[in-house]
Image (cartoon, rainbow over all chains, first blue to last red; front, top):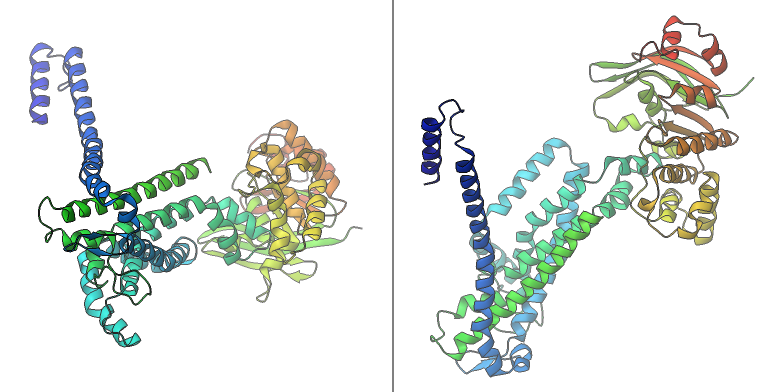
Length: 315
Length: 252
């Protein structure tokens, strides 16, 4: 379609101004084309904005009625969830999502940042290439595959190690999430560490600091806003994940009282119950409300992320 | 007769295939300013960086010959490089304060070497900043970021940072080339003042600077040390035709 327009314009130019170079057209035609293409860009840009607005509005419209009907306190702080019996307290989901994400961050962030430091500052180029390729592959693995492997390897292992009735627990979900957030943390943190000016590190070495002291005391602090961005990205990834953890977390709406409790996350609550709830029922509407809560979490994380990125530009 | 603090004998350095320093023999005296001059790529900065082993950071560097600092072989296998770098401080071409407060910049070195006491650190920071003639300008904003200082102030801060680990020798790698004339003259005055306590070896592109403040001058060309002697003598009666051509601006 666009190519046709260009060809037509070019043909026009050829017939009216044979002396001009082909494909440029008269000034007015060119201006029209420029304007048209700019408009096309703008429309494409609007698609993204439109989608976000639509989702935002839809979630509020769909999610708010149930919250109002149940009562905001009962909904957010109720500890019992039983869709069929009409009990809609989502505190177990909220706390599970928070605990699962926190656990994944606690495990994934140190490993991710240390890997990034190794890649950016210590690793011999060959080793770095191998590790980077592995990290990229890790990022490309579909989340359902993480879930599958978690289910057939991790869950039985946890069950055996800790002598549990079932290994499908919060712990299993944390481990899977921790691995899943590694690639984004490593990539972003490594980029930030690479961007630390060589002069800082040289100055530190010239003062008699060792290589490792320099990395921890100069490179890492200098890259801190980038590293913070990496952490927030990891948090965002972890809190939004559903498929991988639905298969390893036991999917029972328990309070996350211990690492060995089978639990249900905000995401997995929606995924596992949506097809059972009757259309138009309060149950279904409550699940929309869960989606709204999840959306709010993601929005908060995005705001934090933007602050991080802004600091990074200024720092 | 002055004491020699650094002496190189048949020092050769290769960057891979590139023979960057050729049979350098030089004896650098204590408590004086020695200027290393020469056109870009002549090896003067490379030589400077062999002294505190900063060249170690570049892959593919090979060095032979000997380089002695107070009778100690800098390239001996058991050399403690971090301690060597503490004793032989360096100020770089571009001011490179760390992105932290003025105080923390100066305290970085002492902290690295294990000084934790607040009182001791306060003392060292003040002493070093005074030593670098910048105390009066920054004493009221020690906790502010060093990035807010002017280029000339940043460079004096970097000198203070280097002084804070109590070095013996100070290497200055074109440390005024990124600065305006007023800041440059402040650093030159400072260098002249510092030579009482430190030995200064400076690389400079600025012939007048070498003539103004150095006691000894070494002229490098294409990796060779062409001429080395008292600055006065070098600038009035160079022994070598190439030195004369360079100093008088016929090339370089």
